[in-house]
Length: 246
Image (cartoon, rainbow, N blue to C red):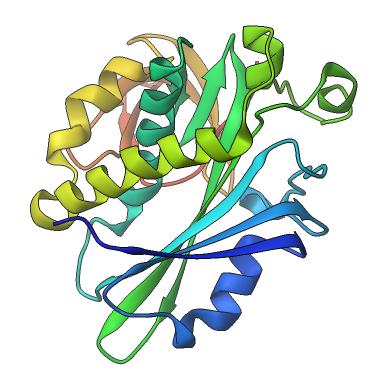
């Protein structure tokens, strides 16, 4: 049965993830706490990047929930969130792709990003799963971002109701979280693969947070980890990191 949602909305906040981490001890254990904001003054992406967060244009949201501490598949939660966002966009008529591990792309440009953090408690982990989706961000703001970025407005030609888009995302994710809690990542493996922007043999550069590797994309494993075939023929498996732009 899907968990109930306790929503906390702010017109302005430093970061929905930062606030959620600070407040995690106060959250109801058997519910999802959804933290949203109209704008963020210190929005964060992965690798400590700034997440550009202009007022009242986009989704800035963090889904917080508690899971068993010993689960080994926590790293799949951002992938499940990315897939939820992709399904939501498909229902709106878009054709999203997923860049491993959890970027959502339209026209090969980033439209959504995910930041997953955890806070330990004695018997459980609080998962703090943040997502930013560029909904109504115009070209002139997108051009100030240091990497190729787009929005639903730019791709579709029409502005959308941010609250309705969030509601659609929430519906997809809550349903998916219920499946994950009972069955893990496996039910999402094939849909995730089907949405990937990468094809077997694609040459890529990969940063594992220590060094840059170059090789050919060799697919993903049942646990969502990435395989890269190096020039010497060795296949290396990565749990986390970033596929760099060409």
